[in-house]
Length: 286
Image (cartoon, rainbow, N blue to C red; front, side, top):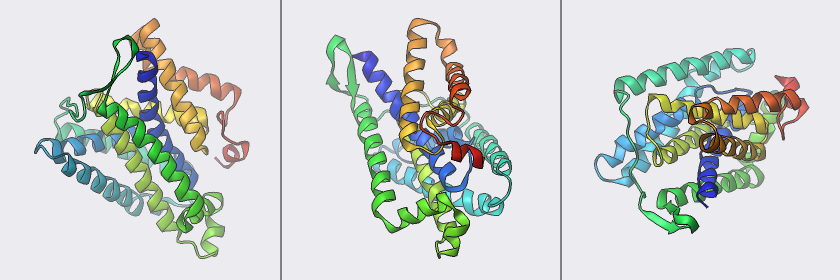
């Protein structure tokens, strides 16, 4: 049961990261290489805003504010200027953002390793002596709620329909009166919120630190394996990466667990370059 619980919790963390990457790609054809840094900085903001003062609610407010401000700022100040430019221009910008955020971890938080001690008490005892903490349960519930909310948003709201239209053809959507800039900025806000949530959940089980940004590579691998245009693929890809990492740590060598996602990526890309649930059409656009 410990095996199942650990894989599920890891899957939740990676699925949130992969979902943010998929949303940005679907909306603006941007592959975000700063997602891991955003997640860890979001975790630090959650830690600093409330936990040091003893108020989890202030931590939540700080994380939400960080998601909105950071997502909107990245799009308005940087990404808006490169809309319509070759895709590699936006990728290089995200690489620059990653460098700046990693420097912020070192300068602001002194690269201190911290953990988020919220809900660490055992909530459920499983067979074999394993336990699920309240944070673990929150990881599962919040991840499910996030994906359900996305489905409802994209399916039943006007702005969600506009988002889907922008993802299909931004120029045509703009000609039909859709505020493309609003849609793209919202995509960044949602993506940053997903990354921040994953960073907080990760910080509840492990240490936040400058080295923790590597979770972004696991999230990116999950998105690529599942398909960059598929939220369903993000979940499946996250499960594959989480399962492979757990088995590597337990059966082979923990050192190899960081490299394993890339081996999985190479295998899947060799067989299906567009991912398990991606489409050839999306690959051609890149």
